[in-house]
Picture 1 (cartoon, rainbow, N blue to C red):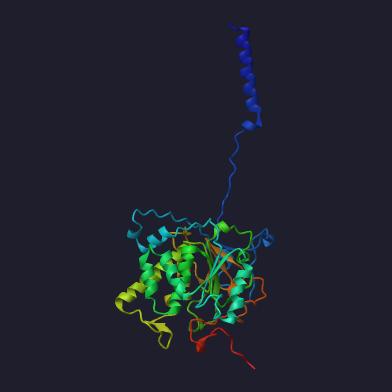
Picture 2 (cartoon, rainbow, N blue to C red; picture 1 turned 90 degrees about the vertical axis):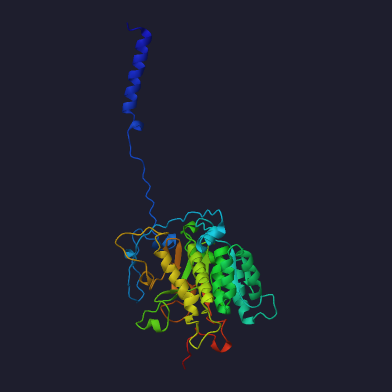
Length: 393
């Protein structure tokens, strides 16, 4: 029997069904999709200069060996945090990764590191180096700026690498100041991060201007510049690599995988040659030590090789099928920063302005950030200033 109460409930139910069926809020709609595209080989431009469409290839008068549009897109993998019950029992690379964990999303440490035989507070500090050294302090007022002497470097390394004794053994075994100077820059950046720059460099622009502001600082952990880009057939007579990255100025977050690799490689090779008795103690007439050049052992050739290896390492990047490795051809002739994964590569003008070759701009170029004097301060006086161009009348 249909009572008044049951009729009321039935009417309410029918009205509710009609309302729900007609209401747009109940229409099944697709979930909003968010496309996160990580282009890890890309041109970096300030936000104000970004075009709506793909940027056109810039003409520099050089051969465009590999246009930007052909670059491989990679997605950087974040290496898992090392967990070692006995940190000293793992491989050398495991130990370094454990002691100096890498966080790409962290801030760049506010350090400027330089090395020299005296500190600026010393009366024997070279007068011609004072304005160069001061430029780094003036343009980075919030940074800790340290000029580490040879005497101070030893206890500093012992403090930072006490838990990785193989590294200390290798550092002490290196027989020449230039080898130790090369090794020191990798070691200090791996452990503490910040900026390393040779004492004969002048800061032209503060580090926060090196990469466009629109690029998130949490997306990269290493900033490097091109040292040499010789577009000539006989380039191998003059340079070690076709496109070579400089290591007189580097900015890094501590623990970066490239720094782990270069420190581990130099350590392993040094100790191997020490054990074999092939390390050597002096440079021969060709500038080699034990049959290998300094440039190849600890210098920019070694540094350049490790960077290319990192770009093509599937432990950190997802390879894209059908596309080849990243090589020098991806960087020759660039005139603006390029980002590859968590590495930003600056054009030759940025750290080598005013060299008068390889299409490098002058010191007043907007992309000129650091001026290097190429004094070769580790060499005898008669062999310095190797980068100066010969004067013509």
